[in-house]
Image 1 (spheres, rainbow, N blue to C red):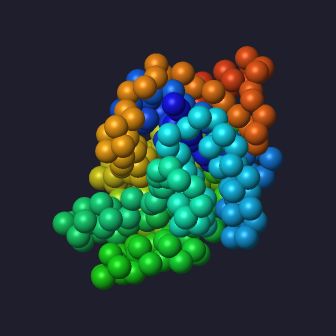
Image 2: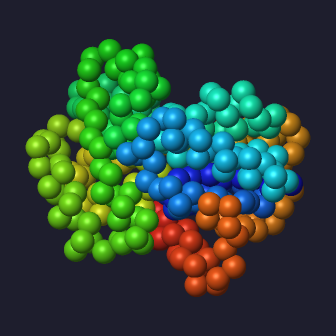
Length: 260
């Protein structure tokens, strides 16, 4: 049986990359809902409708667990998805808790970068409210990074001016941790590192999500049933064109390079 990965687009490959490291002996179905990306600017109702259609398809592909590798999708629909489907569904959320814990040790602040939807959604705000007693978490929506990623645009000369403009109002020296609250954003971690002071830690929730997946598979005794094969789909259409498949593989290679 396979593990299904869902994202609104290509961002979930950053979580899939971690899964391939932590769980190499599994087979994967990766579903990018490219017909409806970006999710961050859509309504909750629209996102739910898109996701139910996508998860129906992923379930039909002989999957034993599904990872919602999309912070926006998790915020909008994870509770409803778990109620409907009779298999483990693992969500991802911004790594605010470890960021706050680290910042309490230094007195510096936390900057959460995400989509407009994630930052406005009740799930994120409840998370921050429950953890951020000292009000040290700031949020910034960066929808442009999602647009760049979906165009496979990773040139520093293009992306850097956008980031500089968006961060202009922030004193970057006052932050201890930057939380990447959208799975597209780790694809730009190398560029973000050049913007922030050396003491700033840039983190995301992908490793924690995959470790949760690993624990879940062990609990249901369905772990290690594959060989690392990945089948890619875009909004229900299997990718057969080697050039397009290679673009997804390139994203995994990019994450490997950033991780090095």
